[in-house]
Length: 123
Image (cartoon, rainbow, N blue to C red):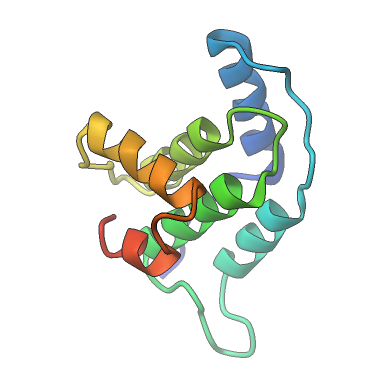
């Protein structure tokens, strides 16, 4: 099955807009590698193996990469949540987790209190 994913530039622009709207230390890409890697891994099978075959796994991988990879100078958790929502929306799905639980989960993931696998089963 084909999935539509946001581009790297779209996610960077999303971070810029989030920082402009909600404030922060500024918008800078500190380390784009984790985001590039996640987008490449989610874009399709490699050697006939899709590491993230479902839409939920793709959204979670991209969100995880942003929130734990410190891609941006600020708003990594907010950008991760936004990118997950975007992945789902582009594919006609919606995140059904209450906002408070979503925020708490993003903090737990970013602070190492929750593993990727634990998070994936909550998505």
